[in-house]
Image 1 (cartoon, rainbow, N blue to C red):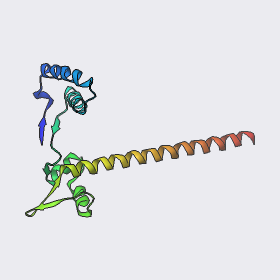
Image 2: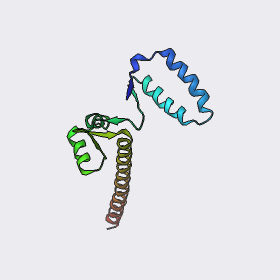
Image 3: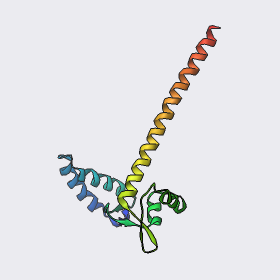
Image 4: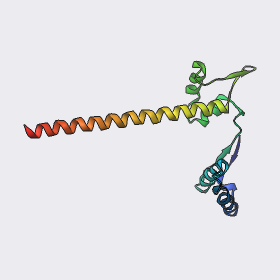
Amino acid sequence: MNTLPARSVTASELDQLDDVLLRLSQTESPLGEMLLRATAALRSGATVAFAELDEVLSPADAATLLAMSRTHFYKLLDSGTVPSFKVGRDRRVRLADVVAFNETRMDDKAGLAQRFSRFDASHDSLLDAIVKRGDRG
């Protein structure tokens, strides 16, 4: 995985990227979308990482990428939630599997948020009905 700290990119280079993005935006290019996101992150001062999906990571690197503890990540490996394989005595995970797990995790979080939102709306409607009934009494 290669990283690109924002401090190593000049304003002139970012301006040149903007020119490329302008041309790519006319074609609705997936590459343009990725470059747009990378450029925005660099402009905000973030470090951007580039990796191929078939890259192999250590569990510690994968846990860092997912912003979770190594202990929790090892539990996911032990349960088979995230596939892993052995290289000698060491475990390794494919970046593609880490990305797939993260996408599923984000989808699950979004679904949970929607369920809570619907519950809150139902709860509010029920409270409104109780209040209205109380006003008539």
